[in-house]
Length: 489
Ligand SMILES: [Cu+2]
Image (cartoon, rainbow, N blue to C red; front, side, top):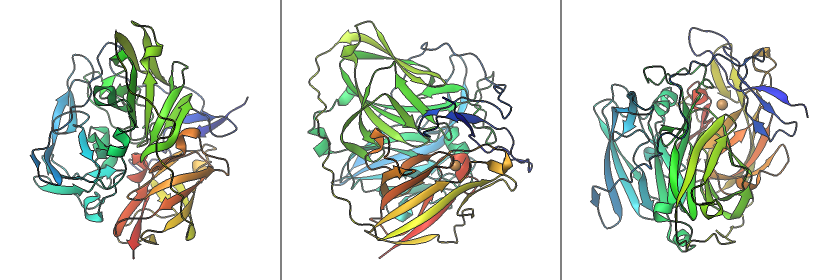
């Protein structure tokens, strides 16, 4: 079947260059297959400035260490983390300068408990601004990492997270306006997991069998330096899992819960597991109503999916590989037998009836290649402008269209995605068709292909104040594809 070529990215951040490198994907006519093949606009594979070759499965995948609170009060876990430069060994034998939380590339994992608060003070030891956003967290506006509320070099800021939300795989990352893409790319990202007693009782794989895995890409030069080129975000050929290139991970012959996060600033991962079904149990904001067997997982920047994989189905000594369309991402080596008392119940979470929406809104996402801007409803982000006022505790339908089918008259389209702060949503449909099976739960980020319209049922609240929403392809939000809602009573 013929497929349409689509432009994936706006190039040209610097020097007023209009629409620099075109990179395209191919979509099936249904629009929901996302086989991402990279071409330039003439259909050639672009010259990849890749660094040293990576031998797949030659390094072990680490699991980011869980941070222990420095102080625990009756209702709060207290942490202190510095935002600092460090070196990481991403490629064997080479030291890569990176930006980190607490010195580790992929920051430490914060494990919170539902309804028990977390207070984290971040000390900025970098030479430039940063701030911190808890992606997927329902937190007060002053603690949300508003883009212009930055932590200046040499100072610190405390963020309070109430964790008054169901268990979920969240992550924390930089959100300083115009700097977010580069800061995240260089390493300011880490897991934040909310454990939930109701979830614990389900008997899902837990403890050492509950493994967060951050997937992302990178471009490294021959010396091992991370190269950040916002004009060419698809030229990042090295695939990392928890900060290591195409690693292996030794597992027991039993079920594991794998919390997959796309921590890239731009890449869309399209994942398969050696042709086997994956049991998806959660999406961005927590558990799905029921497990869903999926053949492939499409994760755009910022999206999460928790899956359960039973490695007892592979032979002892065998391998199971997680693949992206661009190549292998991670190989699981089944190295030891195990007793497994975990289970995946048929029902995971009661689905509350969603209230009637009080109003409909339309948002249009588009790039402006001539002026090197990225727009929502024809405007770049302006912190002084409130784009919508919404009433706390209500529900709205947001219809969001990616208008970029023909950027700058090039004939090529660009995908976007859409992330709401504070408010979670249900994806109602894509171009009138039902969402993919794994998209059936509460989400905070959704992929929108060129020309596609999604409808979201957005649950507003529970806090008051100003919160942003934006394209989570961070090179686009950095160019202005961001708006803000003011939540009022
Ligand atoms: Cu975008």
